Length: 347
Figure 1: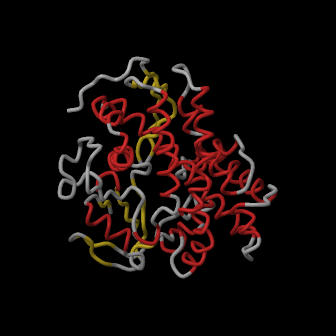
Figure 2: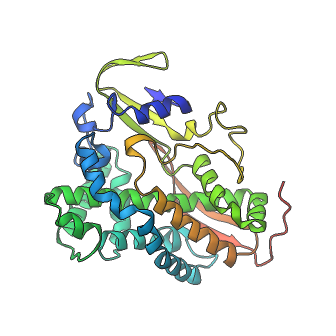
Figure 3: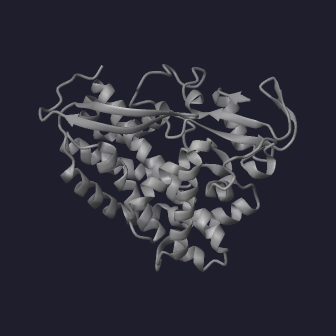
């Protein structure tokens, strides 16, 4: 079953007793990717265990923690922008390393370049036989790294003292690393794409920096980092007039829900002042993205710094994409900017 409307997507995301995230327990179909650590982490669990694990981890994502991390995020963003040129791959030189450094600091582990390779192999594997070797190698290497990496501070050190098993620690840390890095990286890329395509919006943002926050929310709405997710029915029932069976996969499209004309006027337009903006890009209910505040802060820092560094309009060149079962992934792009101050008149 495929769910597209804002109301029904929200219902599925918030009714966790009927629409479970626990694919291993409830899916009536074979699960070729069942050894993915994400499927054994709290994002794929129901209460009460989900609540127990989330409480352990959530203290690392408080506003106070994010505020404490902000100076390091600002310094990292500035250093990356110092080296960024119009010839650079924006993803390799900025969108990947900024969230990786932040997540590494939060986890209390070293900033490892292998995180990018592991994340890509794990998040793009959907059971295809040809992709399994790279997936299995990435999972093995990630588990070994998280088991053995020295950690004297941060989430990993805290989890080691909490009484969790080694596998539970690996699954939780792997979830935070993969989801935390991928979400922010994709949001940074989508921000660049939206503002390059909407020159008047970029000009308006330069004239009124107070629009930074609402601009990020509009990027989230129009181009969510994850276009959809799935749940698994714990019993037979009916949704939106359509029946479903126990163990059925329910695919919800946040991308479609975020453009529901019943909720969003001019749903395909890019409105940096849109308010209210009840998008579902970070989910809803018990599985609302734990790192949403941190992702927003990183992108706020990045956008603010980029507005100061790049005074003219932006263009995107050499865009490389890849189709996946859940949407289109951007693999590479170059951000080219003008040295002339943007004089476009917002419309």
